[in-house]
Length: 244
Image (cartoon, rainbow, N blue to C red; front, top):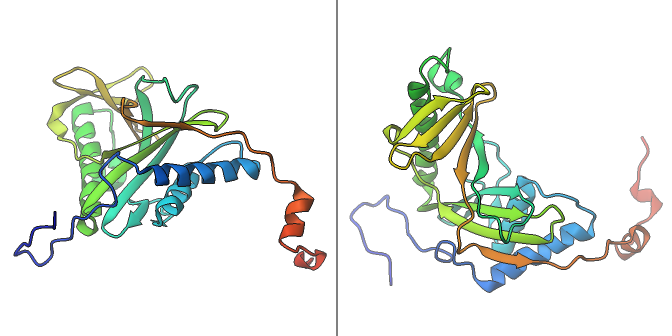
């Protein structure tokens, strides 16, 4: 179906690469072979930037490597916020995870001197900062997804899922201070914990879970690339190293 014609000349086309969380098999295989390559070169863990590189290369997109904002990877009018988390068993873990989203500083944004004085006010400010970042992302993109790669410690097993990146209604959450002095936000209707925010470093964490429809896959343990053999393949010579 074609995108509808609108009178708003600033409207963006809404064509998407694939429906949300419905990864084509080709993309999963493209991701898998790049993860195998990282194992080949001796990587023992995977960072958020690594995951951004792998996903962007797998779909032919751009990874911006920017610490600011939510649009880590972009392709046309689509954008992704890339997250990865390590667990013991990615294929069977269903428990709530603490997904580190970034830093929401109430001191910088609102000049709030004592964030623990009024937890409800502070929590509302934290969510307002988040919502504004989502708004900024939607100025240039028609969709914003959070892409989560759940990895095992040996980097052989994975679960992959993505969700729409939402805005949160501040008064839908009740905020309390925990024993560590951090703020926790609870859904008013369900009573379930949804957020953690650390006043010291302004770290904002969203509690989520691995959905049933997450894509589960595994890779084989590849052999490590031999140093001398690899250098020979690229025609290395000693004059590549210039001693100053």
